[in-house]
Structures are given as structure tokens and as C-alpha cells.
Length: 211
Image (cartoon, rainbow, N blue to C red; front, side, top):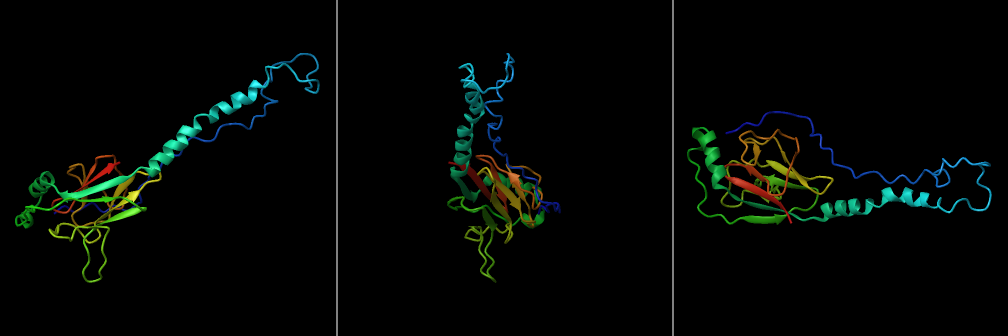
């Protein structure tokens, strides 16, 4: 069994903020400072006709904002899914790292994959607690039950940009990502990319994909 390191501290997840607004505050009348001919007061009949270009230049930084906003909205509206099922590669690697207590474990002969759409702010991963009836969103007590999964094992947490991260809930056997031999630290969000694999328990892999 793998015992995850005990580490507190929340993860410092700094979601990227879009660029600031344009800089329209410098007034158009101040934009052409260099024309210093006689009588600098702009009170006469309209100055040289070229000066109205200043507001157009002030608006130029605003033009790229529309794509940035649409990309941000696109990230939030993008659909992420999780595919859950037994993973032979992970099971074999886990068996090599485990002690004699894992000798009696066998990969299920048949277990259909589950697929669910990730919605809300978080998706819990674990096994149903029969004494209280508490059931996680991804319940790995459904036959064939994965005996290596804690009741409150991990959770997937949505990030400000619409992507997802995995957080281990100080589980007994830990949580790994992409076949890493080192479990992630408890309570520290680990950002996930399209196609990343989250491994929990004795044989379960959760693959996240962005639709």
C-alpha cells in the first residue's frame, strides 16, 4: 500500500486572468501634444483634420478584447468528460509496488467503463459508505468494487478557466496521475490536461477529456 505524504497547505492555483481593459482614459484632446505652433489654445475652429485619429488609436487596444472574452467563455462552456474503468497497466504497476497484502487481488475479468460529464464545481471520487449512505459522485463500490479506494478518496475540482484539477483527500493508498510512481500530495490541486489519467485504488483509472 502506498501512504501519501502528509502535507497541508492549499494549492496555490492562480487561474490566469484575461488582459486588462484598453486604455481609453488619456483624452483625445491630450493625444496630440507635439503641435506647438503659435497660440496653443484649442479654442478656434477645428484644428488640423488629422487629430481625430487619436480616438481611433485609443480604441486599438480594445480590438483584441473580443477574442479574449470569447476564448474565456469558450473554455467555460467546453464540456469535460470522465471515463472510469479498470486499467491493466496501472494494476500491474501497482502490484509490483505493493507488499504481500495485495497478493490476493485480481483484475476484474469484465467491467464496463463508466462515462460521465463533469458538471458543477466539484466531482467526488470514492466508495459508498453503507453505514451512513453517503455516496460519492463517482462511486467505485459498484461491482466489481475496487477495494483500494477510500470512502472519500479524491475529487475533481473545476478551475476558474473551466479546466479541472484533481485533489487527493488524504486517501489511504494515494492518488497518482499518468502512471507516476509518486502519489500527489493530499489537499493540493493538480491541474489536468485533456487526456490525463488519474489512478486510484487497485485498478481504477479515470481519464478526463475535453469535448
